[in-house]
Length: 603
Image (cartoon, rainbow, N blue to C red; front, top):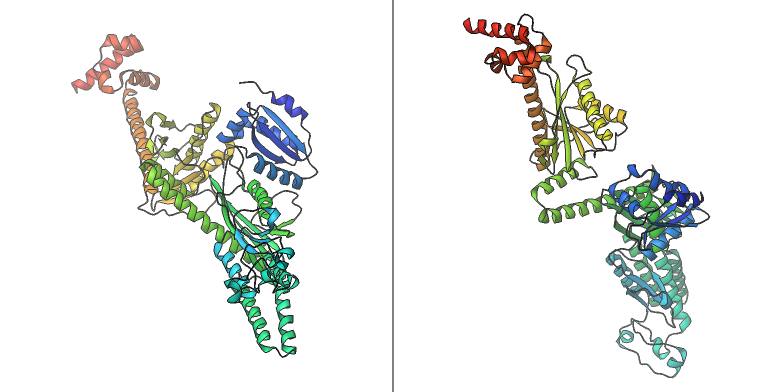
C-alpha cells in the first residue's frame, strides 16, 4: 500500500470555501465533503485522528489523494456536494437516493395535454409535480381533476393535421361526459388549455386562481340566465372548497414556507419535510437516512435541506426546523418558539418522532428474530437508556467500608452481557481519610480511567455507579477532570427502588421491573457489590491477623505483614519451624515469634 504524505497535500489546500474529494489507491472517490474553510476541514481528518470514531479512522486510512473545488460561498459548496454525491455515490457518504421511487403527476407538453401519474420522470415529456410519498393524496388530486375538468385520458397524437384529417373517433369517455371530444375537433384548443392551466395552478398550490376562475364563470352563466351551467360551475367551486377543507389547515398568512425536522440515533437520522403553499400543505414526506460516519444532525440537516427543496421544487424563502445550521444558507432558517409556525414545527416533530419509534421497533423485532438472547438484552438496554452505542463493554463501580473500617472499592467488567473476571479490579482507597463514599468514588473512577487513557486502552460503552445522585455526581466530576465527560454514557443505580439516574437530570428513570435490561444492570451491580464485600472481608481478616502478630514483643507491623504475605495465615506461621522463620526474619525475631506461639499453645 503506497504511503500518503498528507502534510504536503494540506499545504496545497486553500482556506476558501469549497468541496473536497478523497480518493483511494484504486482512484475511486470514497468521500465527498463541503467546508467553510477547505484547509481547516481537511486538516481535522488527519491532525485529530485520535478523536475520530472507528468508521472515520477507516476512511482516513484509505485516503491516497485529495482533490478540491473552490466555490464562492457555503451555499454553493452545499449544492455542489449534493450533486457530486448523487453522481459519484461514494461509499463513505450518506446515499442521497431513496429506496422507493415515489410517483409524480405529469402534465404533458403536447397538443391537448394529458394528466396522469407516473414513476418514470422524463422532463422532456412535460411538467412533473411531486413526488407523492402519500399515494392517497395523489389520487385525491386526480379524482378532483376528473370532477372539475374534462381532460382526455387517451394517448392519441392530437395534432392539428390529424384532427383535420379526421383520423380519430370519440370514445366512451365522450359519451359519458368525461371528455369533450377534442379528437374530432369538438373542443377548441384554447378552451382545453384554460382548464389545463387551472390544473397547473392547483398542483403548484395556487388554489385562489381556479376558485376565482370558477366564480367568474358561474356569475357569467347566471347573467345569461344559464342556470344549469351556473349550477355546474358552483358544484366545481364546492369540489375545490371540499378538497381545501380536507387539506391540513394552516394559517394562509404564513405564505410559502418549508418545514424540515430531524431526530437521530446511532444508526440513522429521521426527517419530516412539509411544503406549505398559500395556506395548505401541498407535499409531505417522512424518511430515514442511514449514517455512514456518525454524521451530526446539523450536517445531515444542511444536506437534506438542499435535497428536499430540490426534489419538491421548492422556492420558499423560509424554512422552519428544530435546528439551525451554522451555515450561510441563502434562505432564512428559523426555530419558532410561539405562534402558527411553532404549531407547524410541533406537527412535523410529532410525525418524525412517531416514524422513528416505528422504525426502531421494527428493527428490534427483526433483530430479535435473528440475534442471540445476549444481544437482544443489550439492544433492549441501549433503547431503555437512550444511548448511542450498543453497551458491549460495561464497567460498574462499588464502594465498601463496613463500619467505617478498611475502605476499599471494586470495579467489575461485563463484556457482551457476561462477566469478564480477568478485567475485574480492586482498589485500596489512598487519598481519602475516613468513610467518605463520594470522595472515594471520585478517586477510584479517576484512577481507573487515567490508567486506561495512559495505556491507550478503549473506554467502556457504559459506566454504572452503584449509588444514587451523590455517587453519580462524584464519578462525573472525576470524568470531567480527565476531560472524557460526555464521551462515555454513565448512570447511577439507587438500591432502594432500582432507580436509574442520569447526570444533570434530577428525575430518575424507572425501567420495567420485568425487563431483561434492568435484570442485567442488577446482575452487574450485585456482582460489583459481592466483589467489593469479598475484598473488604479479606482485608479485614488480614488486618486482624497483622494486629495479632504485632502483639509479639519485638515484632512490628512490617515484620507481621511480611510473615503473613509469605505464609498466608497465622496457622501456617504457628506450624513453621524456627529455621524457616529465621530465613525470613532473622534468628532473634524468629525465636520471639516461636516462643509466642509456644506460649499460646501451652495456655
